[in-house]
Image (cartoon, rainbow, N blue to C red; front, side, top):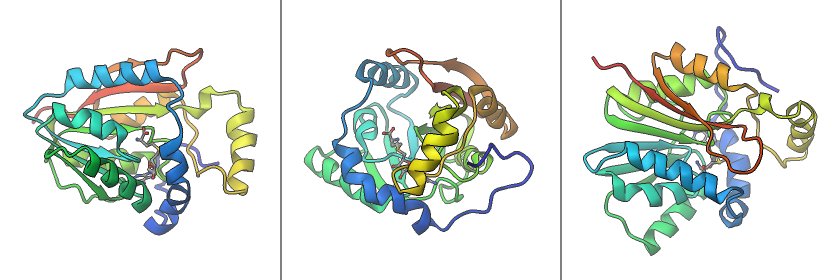
Amino acid sequence: MPHLSVAAPVPARPLARKARFWDRIAHRYAADPIADLPGYEATLRRVQGLLSPDQAVLEIGCGTGSTALRLAPHTRRLHATDISAEMIAIARHKLAAQPLPMLGFAVADAEVPDFGEAQWDTVLAFNLLHLVDDLDRAIGVAVRALRPGGLFLSKTACLSEMNPLVPWLALPLMRAIGKAPQVLCFDAAHLQAALVRQGLQIEAVERHGTKGQDIRVFIVARKPPA
Ligand SMILES: C[S@@+](CC[C@H](N)C(=O)[O-])C[C@H]1O[C@@H](n2cnc3c(N)ncnc32)[C@H](O)[C@@H]1O
């Protein structure tokens, strides 16, 4: 299982290969209920409090767009992206049923610097950073896209905080039979260190879960003003 990379960047897999697992499970993912609804709502309230109607917001790894649909009305513009064309197709279908002029969906790899430079007031990454090939590269792309003073908001599973049998035995076995994606295994301290390495200032580190131990850390980080 890949560890957090620091010095040597991990070679990027082609987009189609990275997207394969997510394309396959997209419809099941869309149908799955949210495991901890009060925790999810707490995160949404927290994020809403950091957004404003004048902000241009980029979401990376948006999945089927549920969060983007909730947050877009609190922004001027929300550009929500995901590597999986199937996820984006479902998101667009939901948007057609609930049109929001400020929301758009697009297929994009969060590890490729195609989001412009210093363009976004806020970048959102929910349940994504443990799934990229190279943590520093993905954060670096987001930082480049953020305007100076902009916010990077992430909620990320810290798999190192689980019973070690899960990340080191169960997940690799599930991956071998196509039931789990490739994951990075790190704890909240490693994640914070990677954010700082990429030039962000950590403003808050929180856990919003309401069901026992919560391995998903919510972080507010700011790109320093110019
Ligand atoms: C666990 S789902 C989370 C979806 C959504 N953010 C949520 O919280 O429900 C992870 C999502 O990240 C996407 N993803 C994985 N690797 C990605 C990458 N390199 N770039 C963009 N999206 C990626 C997957 O396609 C999937 O939709």
